[in-house]
Structure formats: structure tokens, C-alpha cells
Image (cartoon, rainbow, N blue to C red; front, side, top):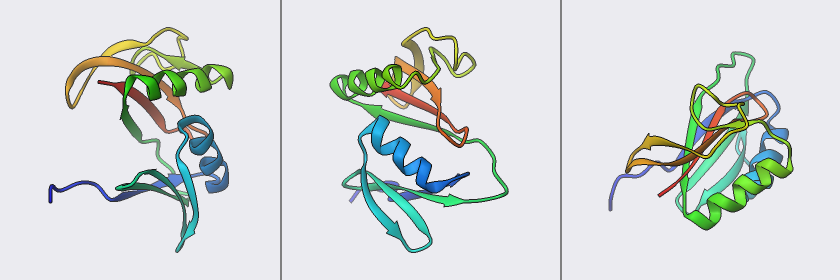
Length: 125
């Protein structure tokens, strides 16, 4: 078996709000409370586990998806009037998609912020 990331703890300010956002914008499944966290299932091998914290720092999370999923998520971002941008330093210029580097090279991407202030990126290969 290849080594993969199984889950990661995402620090939040309001884990319920985060679960609602990620299920609505990304279409992730909501398996509910898992121990001390609220989780969303990104796919059949990876969960995001949201934990409220007072010691909050913004983190960058990048999600690769196929072209159809990318366009659907980008449409939901625009419909929700979420500011977005074409690069990591231009997250709210309302331009894009832009071309940025990822694990598989330069590809089309959009950057925006989640409800806790994390910088989110969607990318398609």
C-alpha cells in the first residue's frame, strides 16, 4: 500500500460552521462527531477533523480535483459570494482561475478563505 494522509486536524473557530461550509462548498460528506472533533469525509481515504481552538493560526489547504468537480466547486464559491483570487497572494482579487504550481506542475487554481480564515485552494489536473 502506498503511504497516504488518512486525516488531519484542522484548527477552527466554530467547528459546526466549518463543517457546514466544507460540505456546502466542496460537497464533502458529513460523518458527524468523531471523538473530540467534527469531521468531513473528503474521499474514501481522507478526513478533515475540525477542532475548536483559542490558539488559532491560518493554514493553507490545497485540494486537487477533476475538471468537473473544480467547475462545480468554483460555481458554488461564486454563488455564495465568497471572495476569490487567482493566486496565493491575490486571494480576493476576484480574478481567475490562475495557473499555479502544485504536486503535478502548473495547473488551473482558485484561492479563497474558509470561515476560520484558512487559505483554501482548489486545483484541477
